[in-house]
Length: 199
Image 1 (cartoon, rainbow, N blue to C red):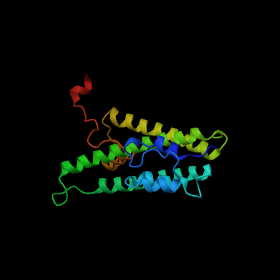
Image 2 (image 1 turned 60 degrees about the horizontal axis):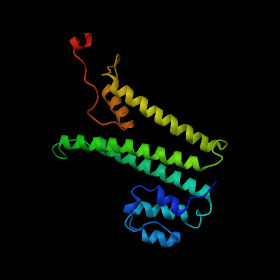
Image 3 (image 1 turned 135 degrees about the vertical axis):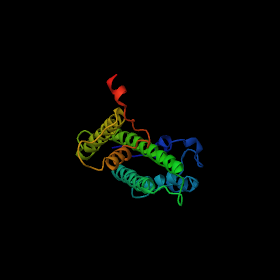
Image 4 (image 1 turned 180 degrees about the vertical axis):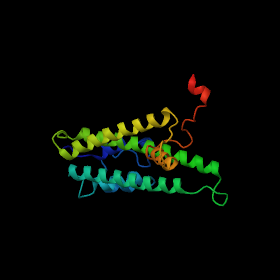
């Protein structure tokens, strides 16, 4: 398995033309990390992937990258849940502002999922023995099935106005489904009136 290089990281990083340090050229990881002050995520990735314990070991680089992605997703999920659960009252924040904030969080969650998916696919594509490695094969399957599930939930959510046929907290269940899929609040279809249903 080929190891990551500083050039790989620079070329993969979004909007790398805005980084404070420019391309690594022949700089050592330690010196390059110091130049990256001003973009803490990029600096973190340099130190995680290219310290003495990882720079020559592609398996360690891969495991650290996957762990960082999982940690970011866990933090994102916790923050989104915290904001989504915050009650909208006159004493805290205007309802319109709260709804707008939830919409931004939902869109951010969806975009982050897509970024993680692209990142994992790129990581897996670099591994020459991915098909024979059961862990990487499971990861590839999980990424593919997670994307399929997200798309199926989105299609179901926007297809119609769904009603329950037995007692349950339908509103909360539907809200949980919406938030898990990263969909915008307030966009669910409205029920059709009787005349519209017959046409």
